[in-house]
Length: 185
Length: 365
Image (cartoon, rainbow over all chains, first blue to last red; front, side):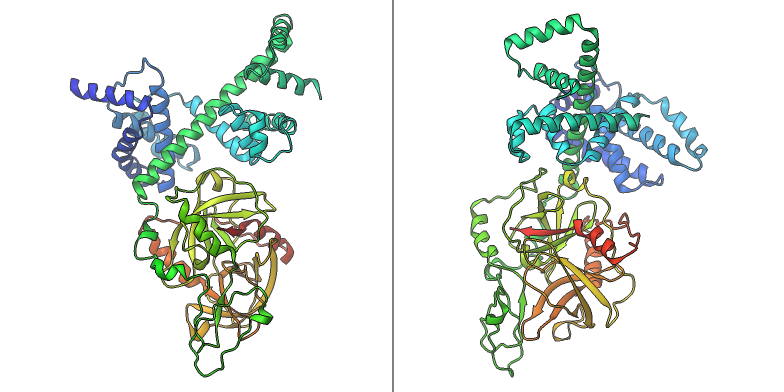
């Protein structure tokens, strides 16, 4: 048992470094369990993919904390979170949430705690960005996330000059703030 | 410039080291003394932090999606590399293909009144010929492409718009990012470019399927592109086409989108081909790959060719065939989900056309 934990801890280092091979290996190993679970609980293949990738995101983010130590196996962790996410989703939309309530409670004893509000927050931001469309989306992402200069962005998006792009950037940011606020209401 | 814009600009300039030393000191001084400004600055910073984690989430999800694709749809060009691809030797001379059969009619040269039609008049016995709509851009592009191999998958980014004339038309069939077009436009490419000028969209798509028998191909764009699309507003017709039924198409015979109307004139295609049908509609080069709709808005086929011996005769690949192929592809994990397509009927025809228009694209090699 001790060696297994050790192996998992090694893998955590690799996930932290976003080692593509490791990420793919885990994906291949765990995803079949999640798709089985989701599709047998009134979900589609796409639902399974989305849920699993959200769970995977949470795992990746957790590894960013250098103090993070996995208390269970990676597969247990990912499947546990996926199940919880899926149950939350269907109980939210379901006509008959009681059907799943028992299982949801059961699941909460599993070592799969995650910060739900954080996930909702990033999802809201991501969806607001998608809703905004182009060129705002690219403009903001390139400037604030990839830290490209206004000049580079102006060239990319065919603005006549950096000053125009700058004005646009302010308007886009305001729009995004409004969209995010609207979703949070 | 309002104060707010100005503040926002200064915040960014400060955070991204775009300030001069003196401006920076001045800004810090103001921050220390002006608590309102400080609050606003903190809010700005917090929002940017949320923004960054939000984008990071998108980026990680994007990575995971491509990992998913690499596991479950490996060998992106499976269809191209296997039985579906026409041997390259034939493809090299594909620029125009004549299906010439009838030996009794005198070989006619219609080139003079066909204008831009490229007539591949290889077979002197031929007369009743089919011309695939396409122009000269293709042949030169083939040479270009051989130098840039190997080709990667479609790029996630938007490209700048080009002004040159497109070689043909493609259209979206599922908001998951699938497009249909004519095979002869794309069969020599792994990646091709689509453009929609009105929507200011230009992006790359991957040629994921080339039919071995009929003139059609399936394209797919990167998920980051397709997520910007609204649901596709049309579906395949349920039932069969009607002789004499009104149809229309949207395509790119020139650099602008063009609407054309026609009538279904025969339920069989060229030489009684049961997988195609015939419409009476004046068709120009560039219409290749264009969608054909009934007047009520149902998709009934893809325009493939015209008959240059008979004016206004255009051949359309029947949608039943396309549907069958799409069903077969499901077994190979290419799932084109048209169930999300939005099919509310427009009140009048012009509205319908307007709604369909953003889903029709220029094809550029």
